[in-house]
Amino acid sequence: MIRSLAPLRTSAGQLGWRAAPSASPRIAATRLGARRWAGDESRARDRSAVGPFTWKAAALFVATGVGLYVYFESERAKVQERRQQELLTKSIGKPSIGGPFALTAHTGAAFTEADLLGRWTLIYFGFTNCPDICPEELDKMSAVVDAVDRRTGTQDVLPVFVSVDPARDGVEQVRRYVSEFHPRLVGLTGEYDAVKRACKSYRVYFSTPPDARPTDDYLVDHSIFFYLMDPRGQFVDAFGKNTTHEEVTAKVLEAMAKWDKLGGGKAAGI
Image (cartoon, rainbow, N blue to C red; front, side):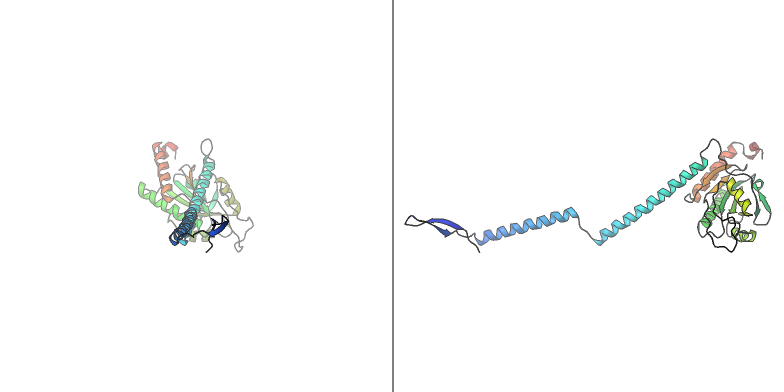
């Protein structure tokens, strides 16, 4: 222990030095405890500023981040779909969707736009080798048809599937494919040029090579909307992948109610 020195005057009047008395053990202990307390308080402030880090907190942070990403991606897809629908319908009067076409039904019979007149139509463009989106959309379309049938007590909605892969989707292939969905589903195919004209009439994009052969290995990209057409063959609405079958059913029933309110087929001359 190092002691401090204090001045001392001797009997001869000389100035000297003596050791100052050291602090008592109790005072030293008090000072040591104060220093320790100050150190603990400083470390506590550091922990409170940083916050406790645990694996549970890290997992919660990651899970929250993933959830937010999925949510915003879903919302972004819905916004893009609404914008595409607005582009389809943004015009003065009715948009120019639908028109003449001449294809072959899955039964082998000729089928044109005239065969759609007098009935409501849900029409979807896809291909039979589509792994997931086409089956999902056709299942949704079938659910809509059944729901509308139950609500109206009629069978006024005709579901239609048009292949955009004519090289691989012949009549027999389309027949087998549509049999897996709604019993009223009509499957259409044809030569490449005939399919191209139908797609152009309905503003449908597809990427099938014009010189493709049935044995070729290629991918087909295409529009994934299906359309609601009224009994005059005129466009009413378009529904994308993120639209539920309940939402589509409500839109179809709303369009049918408006049609009937305006006089229906009699007023339309059909």
